[in-house]
Structures are given as structure tokens and as C-alpha cells.
Image 1 (cartoon, rainbow, N blue to C red):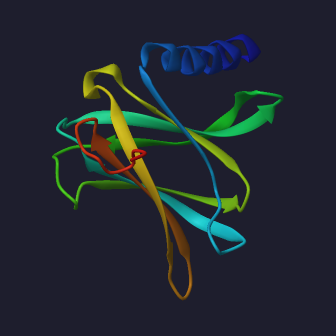
Image 2 (cartoon, rainbow, N blue to C red):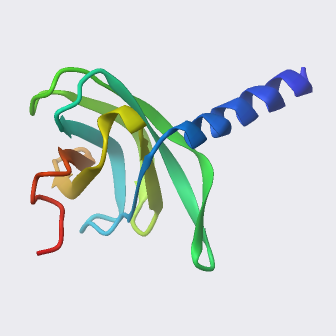
Length: 135
């Protein structure tokens, strides 16, 4: 039983090697804790999966600690979103792995405050878009 579980976990982490684009950010919003991570597809690609991880900072490197959730994004539109529900503290490092088929992406992280819950929203843009890039 242990061997099966260990091999499944190894396979999950090895899948990350097949992905090209890695996004990394630290939660810096005004709230102390957030309830959800929402991914919004504004790229040219459709029907792809992203995996988000909690990261630990080890000196200059970031190490994936545990999966935060898997996101399936379909058609391209502002309504194409996928949400993972978790408690995420301010200062937490998060990494999102985007598949190679999507190509290079830029991203914008925004924080939405609602009366009963707070959301971290990550919008993915095609590389041609100026959004999420340094001017």
C-alpha cells in the first residue's frame, strides 16, 4: 500500500517536469487570510490544465511543498475560470505550472475582498499582451 501511494505521489511531481511555464508569487493582499485561488484564462489557448502548489523558500530556491489544486481551463473568455478552495495565509508562496501547449504567458495577481470570503485571482495572458509585464 505504501509503495502505491509513494509511486502515485512521485508520478504527480514528475508530471510537473512536462510543463513549460512556471509562475511564482507571494500572497501580499490586504487581508490576513484568503479562502480561494481563482485562475482566469485570457490566453489564446483553450482546454488545458494547470497545477498550483504551495511553495517553501529554501535560500534562493523555491520547493513545491504540497499541491494546492488542479485547474481545468476551457474556452477563452473572462468567464473561463477555475477555483480551488483552501485557506491561504498572507506571505504564502504559491507556484502555478502552465502546460507547454499554452506557450509563454504573463500573469496579473489581484485580490478580491468580499464580506464572507476573500479571493486571490490570477489572470493568465498570452505573451503578446502587455498586461503583467514590466514597462
